[in-house]
Length: 189
Image (cartoon, rainbow, N blue to C red):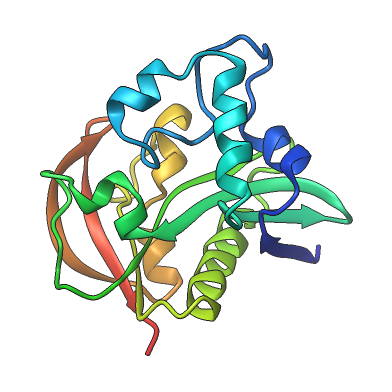
């Protein structure tokens, strides 16, 4: 299987990965780490999709994985300064570099278990690197091989990041699904 990962520039493909089944639902669109909490809560139904479309006017909002032209995966990646991680009290800053963050990966049902998350993470790294990032960080769970509930697996696992060459740079005060999150980093220069 040849998975192609490219910047997320096609709104309909982003909607396939992030849009809820009901357009009036007040969930997802991967906005919770991208916009301030009050704004995230205030965006209701179709306004969430409109916000993503607005963000896409300024460039890709992540990367998408394709299998034979069908969109099968998503990874959110952006400059940390453009996310809530810039002001997080739970996720530390290792230094003052203008690092990028990858914080959400999602693979469509029916395509899981095929290594697509590895391709997505590699694509996120490539996108950040080609955009001039000096380093990229992720904040996965350190689940020590234990099963992670699918609803909380979007942050990835420490093992996934280690296989991609990331190293543990710091502990965090964040916990998801009962597992501590760690700050994983890959230097790009």
